[in-house]
Length: 351
Image (tube, rainbow, N blue to C red; front, side, top):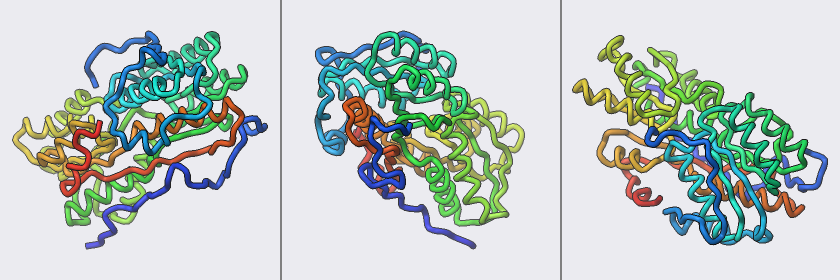
């Protein structure tokens, strides 16, 4: 059997020098759950909610951010109905309290046009900087154009937008995550010939595109591994459960493994599998609370942890530097960390 290493180690630190070097802000370079709400959530120093992030995140960010006090920062998230995005927003509220910043966040409800409206609202409200977590890599380009025209720094976080005028970006390398979960599954199966189904995120979002690219990068070396089916479940546990039920009806026990681009969908697929009395291995990405518990119980074989708190703090710190005319990194990469049956305890109660 051809075997590669279980996963590549991406140890790119937040403060590592990127190929872009340092860019001066003044330079010419440019879950279901509750029903979605489009109302803004405003946090000032006296009213910000504490998140449950570990102290290590604050230590990693260096504590308070110099020059942040008194600033007004707005953020639009493509959704605030998933644990990962809620973790980013909660951490931003905590950061705002620590730094005396007025912070307003918006739920984009998975609608690029709504995110543009929210950016325009933030501009009209006179924010000093904007944080953009885009629903669609192309459709949300207009958000960047609007901020640039208004002369307001706009920092992308977690998902990418195809616009080279974006002030800066903080996230994790999604191609690597796709490669890591696919290689982990191959090593777990101890085979180079089996059948998989792939559950994707929202079509057109950078994470969906790049995670699938990573999956196929690995599969190029394993021609006898067949993708029986591939479809989106839009990061949703319930949609993934329904999709998996359909696939089980169509393919039955031909399915040997499930490779999911996030944990919510992996967990939904696993519910459908267990309901059929089957035991098909599932793997996901993000390291959400339920996924860590699933790795402990054996319901998931692993999850590639993505640091929501580190990403949003990095984006906010970068925005402050930009507003104050300080040097900042054009791109900041937070490495993924694989959660396995050997180390899941390190991630329990972390958030």
